[in-house]
Image (cartoon, rainbow, N blue to C red; front, side):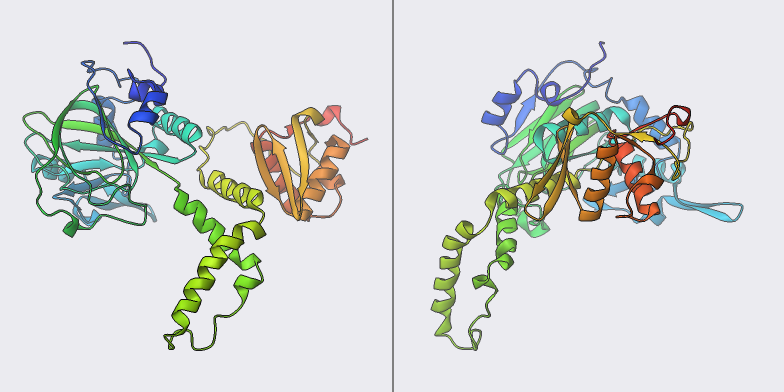
Length: 405
């Protein structure tokens, strides 16, 4: 089996991503039957999952047990291990986990993208491609068992069957494309018959738009599958951003009329004024700035994958020397009352003291933190230098080659 770097195209193959977005995304489920049991083996295998669980390294809540649609209390399968004066909390008790698993419990490994490199890289790719947040969970269910009871998710779902098989029952949605705040409640399922049943075998993929009710069962074979969830930003989120900016408009900051809540004659006034504000507000605001702010907040919410730990590091101090990049690689911008650094395709918003300090760095080219103007205290200057090193804006100079002159 060839090594595969998984991305969106490999998830939806043989469909092209363009066809997937036009025909399935947010519209209907997609079942890809591959007849390739080892399709995902370069992503993760059943043996990998057994090793993760058996090692006891995945402490609660990175390992959980569920049955009948409910998660176990952690005390049922974890323990605290004392080592000297320290307690290691939430250590999984493998014997208890295996005992409950044999009785039909599902073992879940939430947020496995944080600790498994190949899955983390896949989520990073999806996030950079879609600009929506991606996460990954693993679910392992024994044979002849029920998985989760009927429910819907408030995120897009890609189910990757790693090993074994599982039968999925899909039901008509009770709410189309629910917002992430519109969580499933048990009373939403009224016992309706499934609209379709799909058996996933190793190598298969199932895409479910958010809101599609689903439940699962296994037959003779156990099941191990990886769920990639994509939590989307919606038009409602962008509109909410616009409405929250209404406080920048003097008219919308004015008080509602005295007695507005107790006098019924004000109801029509409230309705008319509200609708009028919705008509006029967009013309009064800087929509480009609003969109930029929303995009910056979305990008800021994307978790940055930590770099590998390196032991060979030298602590920086006020006398350490650094070099800024050439001027063609970055731009310092002023947008009304905002200061921005545009570098490597990303914009960073700066406070005024940080912008002034960064400007001084760029004018000097090569510098030491102790030589910079005192717009920031020395500790803050060092923090700024560390951040600029992390994003590869700065490079460290050999002290023997730079004396500050």
